Image (tube, rainbow, N blue to C red; front, side):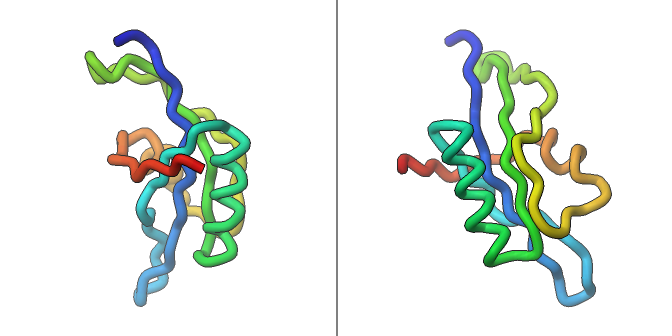
Length: 93
């Protein structure tokens, strides 16, 4: 398949205990769309990020995530959350 780049918006919600947890990741078709989606998600949640990851899904090898935009409250272990390789919900807008 070769290398592909995924653009993702990921919201963070606050639990009843006050912890920040990742919500459902949304895959977007462009970097600018991921940033706009993260902006929308940040208004509805504690915070959000837009990021990209490039790699080869056939062999499950990806470079570290590149943060495109950070908004609102984010967990201290943000890069661990982003680099876990989440399942994404497709956004074709």
